[in-house]
Length: 495
Image: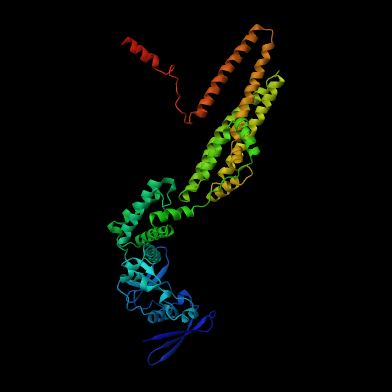
């Protein structure tokens, strides 16, 4: 047998001395480590050059069932690989096996006695791979636990994803990929937004459609088919490994998942005095509007399921704010124009002028805050921005409550603008009540009466629509006022 001994002059030097020993002669070769690509000789005999769909190449020796990423066209690399093959004893491998040979640093390899653990052993029959040969032998596969078997299978699909061109696609790849996607799709339907499956429902549909196309006869020898299925099954095995596939019972799995849940962070809560003041301001000065934005912020800050849901919640959060602020901006702009026109009227009483001026300022405030909020929210639509946003909102002095009050400023200022504008109109109308003309005083009283009726109707409508989404207990009537009692008595008397 031919033995190859590698003796480097120095790890950093460009020349390496190779001593090739045969039973009768010893040959010393000096090969350059810095050969250019154009200077490399032809491919050695029995080696096949394989091209990945991404463009990189690797080499396969069918007789020895060896795969390597090293360029065997370089004589130095080829001799080193052959030495590792001869010293590792790959001749007794079964037909379903092959080995990926790694060529590390010469001084490192020379210090290792058993180099078989430095190479990846692949079993194509059972679709598993490991650096330990005993783990992937067909007679030992049944001894692997489900989680160990899943890890070895992940290593196999990762290997095949990088080296797909020298063998056909394994027969079980399509069925296993279809089965995994079917479960992920089912989990999305059952768990909804809480699903942690690696693919969403829409992604499962797209992937299933691609797999169906790959089963056509025209794709039977497709290398891209092998790459696609290997990538998909590698992701499936990675997800299962993260979820401790095949390790725990149902109760143990539930307990383990509960222990992995992070402690829920509560937003900073102000003291009782500050909370009392905040409640008063929120319910009266802010017309209870911040409560709506507080619920919106809390629902958007919840993280459930996959990471893509965070981006989706953040985009919906921004879209709702932008939509509402756009409506408020339109109304505030129209109201500002009306108020300015009203202030331009001659002979306006001081009370009407003060109320109109306050209405102008509040409309301007609503417009300024709304425009700035729309600009800032739309320019920070990335997922990372959502984490920073919610982090700062939680840890501010007033927590989510204070942030909700700031978010409600555009509608609150708009409401105050409407209220003060109405007051200015009423004050201007009341100027005519002191006139001597009977017609002027009568028309003023009619206007005030109409205003009172409209005010009552608006108040009833606002009250109704503020409580209509709250569940109320059915009203219990006294027995003497129970609806239908008089009708039943009348029917009984007639009988």
